[in-house]
Image 1: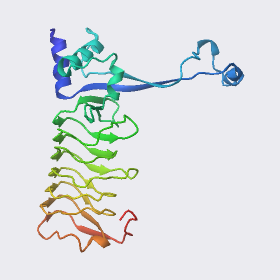
Image 2: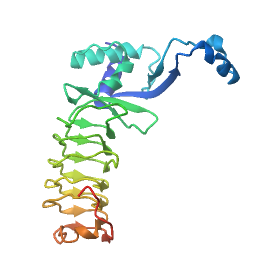
Image 3: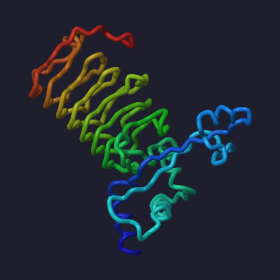
Image 4: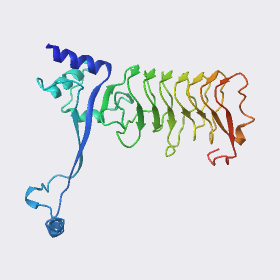
Length: 265
């Protein structure tokens, strides 16, 4: 194995496969539609009418010079050698978010120009958003993931947090998903902000929130181990009798808002 190949393998081991998402659109067009296309000044001679729909392409982009090697076969070989699965094309990797219902290949840093495709290891070196539509994650548990070194957004239906103990960033839950989590155990530490809006889960294992703790318009319970909040605690008025923060080191303020209790409760 050459030095550049070793460098690529080491990078994938630590961070994942860095890529840029590219998309192309093609469609099957009937001959009767050609006048309309011509009116749009499209050159029908260069269009392929046979292909239908959207196709995603990914461009691998390592932060170092890889011109001396063909990186696509190297990535395919890495997947086969480490996991034992043959992939016909690297563009199939984003569709392998789950294997047998468990996290497998995950898209990290979704909102960055250069994203990462990472095996679902105990430690993820990037931000993660679980999706039910885009990327179609298709799993209900976080499995063996213990740490997320970035933000964590939940935009899909999860049944449990698996082994997740640490989020080195923010935690939030989408407004557009009916969340069915009963507990966030074993989650202990969130270094950023925690927003539990629309959630009705038990937080019995949570000990530390480094930023703001937003409990407004939620029905979370059992903050029995919480000992530190680095920012403000935000409450709805109907929650004042539910929580007691007298034993919590709150570096900001406890702010109460006159919110209506959500219909979900």
